[in-house]
Length: 123
Image (cartoon, rainbow, N blue to C red; front, top):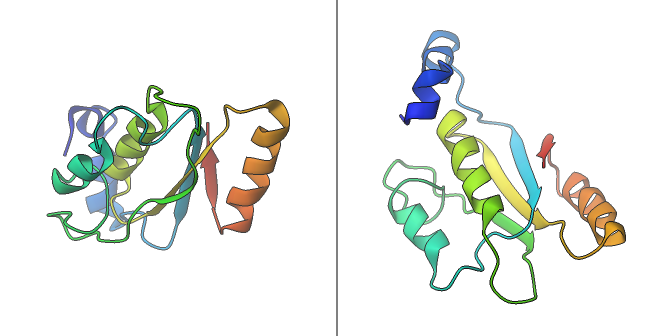
């Protein structure tokens, strides 16, 4: 449980309603996922901040990255957003798609995420 999780009482909702996001695919469209130097996404998985192989909390389905930002380093805001989603809905399947290449590519990304089965798309 994180501070944000407790502040919005999503921990109580999960336990009270016995939900954890299982069966839902939440997708983020943002600047980048893993473009800061190093492999910070893998570190986040190993720390339990994201699902994937090696996650100590049991959600081993990795984040599906449809397309990351291709032009060098970026802020990885999308990965931070996915960490928050994972805190609130640890059973949800997660995906990411950059939306920072052009307006047309952003629109294409929304269609791609919908086609990938996303029930919820956040920006």
